[in-house]
Length: 215
Ligand code: CA
Image (tube, helix red, strand yellow):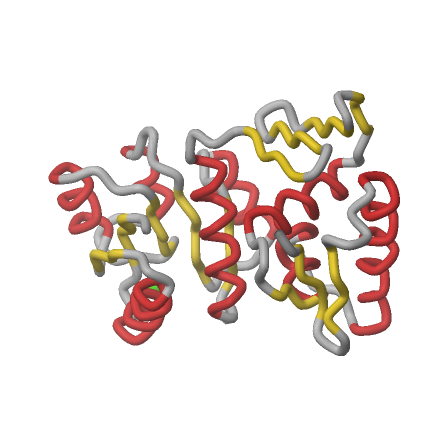
C-alpha cells in the first residue's frame, strides 16, 4: 500500500484515478491545482505523485521542480515528444498520456513503487536479478540481456502472477503503440527471455490474452 497524491484539475479524471488506486489498495489525496499540490507536499510525505501537466495556477512542470525524493508519474493529454522529454528531463519516473486504461496506470504505478522501494534484488530459482545494476545472474554467472529484455523481465517481476496483455507490455516497455500486426514482436522477445533465463515454466502464455509470470 502506498500513500499517493493525485494532482488533476478535471474532477472526473481525478476521481477515476483515485478510485482505481484505492481499489488497488492505495491511499490517495486529491489536489486540483498546482498551488494546492504544493500545500499538500509541504504538509506530508507521499510515496508517489500522479501529476497532470496542464493545471490551474501552477503547471505540473513547475510543481515537479519543488519535489525531491518522491517519484512522479506525469499524466497528461499532451503527447508531443518534446513535452514527454521535458517531463522526463525534469526528473519524472514515468509519463502516461490520456486517454489511458486503468490497468496500464496501475502497472506503471507498481513498477515505479517497486523501483523506489529498497528491494533492489529479486531471487527466483537459480536467478538473481539486480535492479540497480540492471544485471541478471543465473547460477552466479551473468547473463547479458538487452535493455528491452531487462525491461520486460522487470515488468513481469513487478506484476508477478498478473496477466499482462501484449498491448500493455508494449505500452510499458516501448512506451508507444504498435498496430496489431506488429504485436507479435513481443512473442519473439519473450521466447528469447525464456530461453536465456530458463523461464519456460514461469512465463506462461495465456491463450488469447497475453502472458503471466508465475511465482
Ligand atoms: Ca489538466
